[in-house]
Length: 103
Image 1: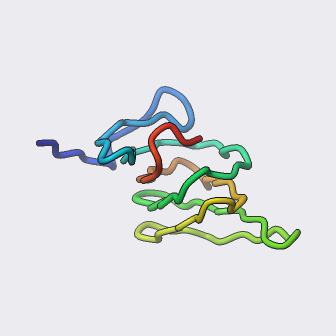
Image 2: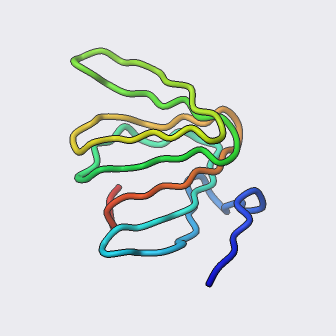
């Protein structure tokens, strides 16, 4: 059993993660960051939940880039093949649920 206070987690580097659980090949991780992530495409679905802070989720759709501002409580779901990157506006904490080992 675990109780995790997300608001107190701070990583030693951007996108540092606290592994919470792995369930049937799916990882649940708490990330702390204050820097953008790389543009990427997941090999499976991803659920990205902003717990603390603000994150601009940049996505590429049909050759165009769009930005969606995510605030605490906002959930972003990416399907396999969706090109995206997260850009925090200051420090942020996010919960990510995705295939274990995904980038």
